[in-house]
Every structure is written in structure tokens, then in C-alpha cells.
Image 1: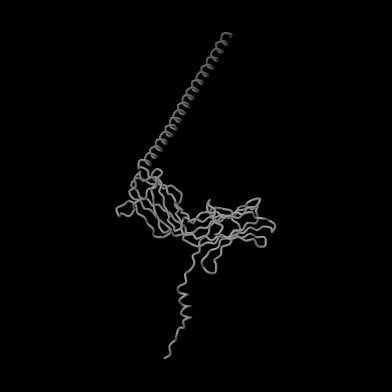
Image 2: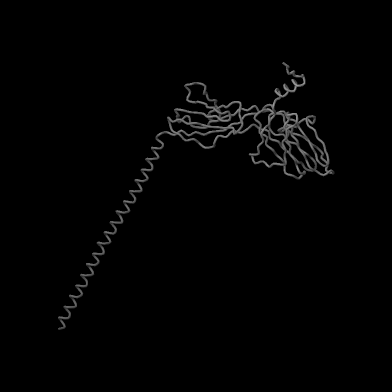
Amino acid sequence: MGFFTLQPTMVSLILSGLLSVPSVTPHTADSDGLPQASLKNEEHSDNSVILHSLTISDLSSKDAEENIILDSPVLLKLECILKAADSMQISNLTWIHGEEEINKELYSENNTAGEWHTTLKVSVADVNSTGSYTCIFSSTTEAKATFYIKAPGVHSGGKTLVTYNGDSTVLKCDSFKYKPVEWLWYKVNENEQVLLTISSESSRFKQDNKTANETKLHISGLTEGDGGAYVCKAIFKTGESEGQVNVSVLSLMVPLKVFLAIVAEVAVLVGVILGYELLSKKKHSEDDVKSEDEQMTQLKSEENGKSEESTTRQRKA
């Protein structure tokens, strides 16, 4: 029986295929409504660098901006392209991270066929490497392009939850399609956020993280003191984001007071209507009596007139 022999080259190819690591591709978003320039996002052939590029048509153009949402570390290549005439002289080109100028040795620049190109590599490892990265082309005027690197946001609904003493409620937050490393819940006392203790089995606060991109806070046995603002915080490798849920806990007397107030208003309204009806009937009755008196007076007057006329006739006869 013959045996199939693997050559060293074939073994190397198989191992390289099994051990290759897929690249991490960040998500971009323009949900903030920022004006978008011409941009392109590409992945290099070495599967290690993600390219984000912004193009400025000329120095009089509006500043170009792009949001880059990252939930995990990645190596980025940020590129700015300024389309300008060959005769246009750029006196200065700088990159700024936040408000700090970046060392010129960390980015490249060149002018080819009337287009100015500059690229900056950014290793986004933690919150310190996020923020705004701006390339500035200076001449008689300035043209800017800014990349905003940020952690994903958190959605918390925005509506106040209304409940009553003794009831239970559920607060919910989510981070869209992104998956944070950890979720934390805080209660806002005055201007301070206090981390909730939810590890104890006997605690009235229970945290439910059945899906990585969503968290729920169950609160039982509510009291009026539980009312206020609660903060859900999503911890990403690239930073933190938080949302706020407001809770209003009402006493059971509140709906009763509202009901009694409504009953009182209805009673007053009915009393006014009945009083008006009684006054109307009384007025009609008085008018009827007055009308009868007037009729009787008129009849008596007519009878007296006829009697006087008859007496006069008799005297004449």
C-alpha cells in the first residue's frame, strides 16, 4: 500500500491558512448629521490597516468631516486630499489630535498633479487615541478635514418611566449593533453617580445582560426614594458611553387625589347646572304669574270701561 507524503511546502501553506487572523473592520457612521466630503474606506492587502480618506475640492470648500465609530482597537490610516491648481502654494500643512499638534515625522505629504496628499497612521488602542484628528492646509486661507474617532453611543429611550409605590419596573439601554466589554448601572444622587450594588441575591436591583449589546435593570419594591435619574454605562475598549433613564415613583394617593378632584369638579358643575335650571324655572314661574296679573288687570279695566260707558248711555236716555 502506498502512502501520501506531505511536502514541507504543502505543510507550510496549510499551517499558514489555518493560523491566519482575520482583520478587524471598524464601522463608520454619519448619524450626527455632519457634512460629508468625498471619502473612501479601503482595507490594505496586508489586512492590517484600515484606510479612511477625505477629499477637499479646493481651499474655499467647506471643512470636510467624518465620524469613525470603533468598539475595538484597530490600526487606521487617515488620508487627506486637497485638489488644487499646480500654481497654488501651500505654506503649511499640519495635523492636530484634539488641540495638540502632531509631530511632522509621524505623517507624510506630497504634491502630485495638482493634488496635495497627506496620510497619518493612528493606532487606536484605548480612549487616549480616540478623539478628533484634523489635517490643516494653509495658504492665504485654510482648508480642514477632520476625522472624529469615538466609541459607540448608547440608546436609553429618553422617556420618563412612571410607576407607583410597591411596584416593579425595568430600565433598558442598548448599544445598537456594538458589543461593550461591560455594562454598569448608576443612580444619580444630586450631582453624583453612585454605582448600584446588584450582585447580592437579596438586592432589589437585578441586572440582565442576556445579549451583549443590551442591558436591563430590574427594580422591585419601589419607593418614592427610588425616583430620579439612572445612568447605564457601556464600557468599550475604545472608551465609554452612557445613557440616562428617568423614573418617577408616585404614591398611591396620587391617583386617588386626582379622582377626588375630578369628582369634585363634576359635583360643582352639576350644582351649577341644577342651580341654573332652578333659577330658570323660578323666573318662568314669576313671568307666568306676572302675565296672568296683567291679563286680569286688563280684563278688569275693560269691564270697568264697559260699565262706565253703559252708565253714561243710560243717563243720556
